[in-house]
Image (cartoon, rainbow, N blue to C red; front, side, top):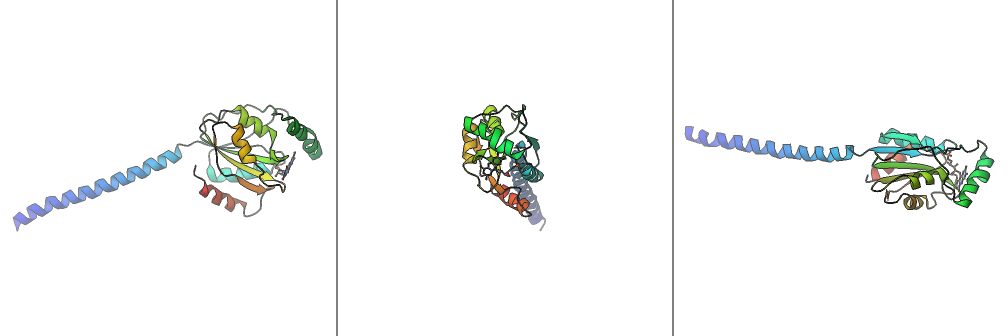
Length: 195
Ligand SMILES: Cc1cc2nc3c(=O)[nH]c(=O)nc-3n(C[C@H](O)[C@H](O)[C@H](O)COP(=O)(O)O)c2cc1C
């Protein structure tokens, strides 16, 4: 009997040790995976003239965390709708002008949400400046677009052309400032993105 105990006891310790080693290495893998996601630095950037895109930016930011800033032209647009829509913005669109913007450094971010209202069938000109003048090589852009009925046009693809070397993911598209379901729709959209 003593002999049997002497054989079984070490075997019990050995199997317990093995079980511990397996579960410990499992935990380590999980931690490494989580660590990778958490080291990605997120920025929510947006341009907004009337407040709709800013509102959507805030809804996104409340779910993603990270930093947030607005893209601001050096010369603000007029507060009058017609002056902006049919004056300055139309002229910029027709002449392909990228208006100067206040300096924004994006170099430390990996994932950059870029929000714009649809302006004359594409993104607003200050967003063009933002994308063209920063180095987006190796970064991920996640567009979000508010519009007045025209939809997303080719804004996400247009963003990819300006932000050389960036990977552009599926945009979130919403009419004006959305409604009471918009936060939930943002949650589902974020879940579907691999970033
Ligand atoms: C200059 C200008 C151009 C616009 N062009 C379009 C357009 O081409 N298609 C569209 O659906 N809505 C257009 N709109 C409507 C805006 O996209 C829409 O109201 C948007 O939600 C405004 O966002 P904001 O409040 O953040 O500025 C335009 C608005 C302005 C001021």
